[in-house]
Image (cartoon, rainbow, N blue to C red; front, side, top):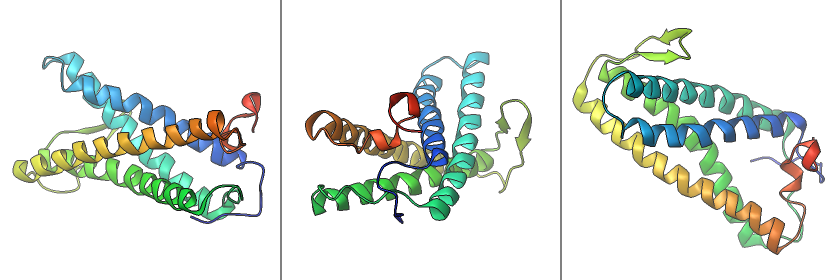
Length: 185
């Protein structure tokens, strides 16, 4: 990931996209868990459709976030951070970008080969992109689920690191991504 010359904070567009994606991810994960645990019927269908819509939203926001990152960059890393921590941070951030882009794509392909509609908040359905193949769908849904578990671990690592910087190191790392009211935009 590229880093710019700014040292104090992320640009407003970076913050907005970060927090919108965080809200979508933190919503879609519990929805994903709930949708597999409720009885088949209208409630389960609504949860699946909401999950698919959030997934597409995450994909759109992640594409915008990637473009934003390539155009405006990010602040330079805090010089007081150990090199190994910078390496771990870079690996976690890169993994989050890759997986948050790949996850909805795999979900969409899995949904297509399963033969189910892919709605976007009831406004329209995405067209299927491949023919029906339930065996492949099962494999792709399994991959989608396991990548979801990996994402949860990475997100918890990301949140843990932010809290570590705030409560233990007492530095400005988290504040650089917070909205104005909390110290940022």
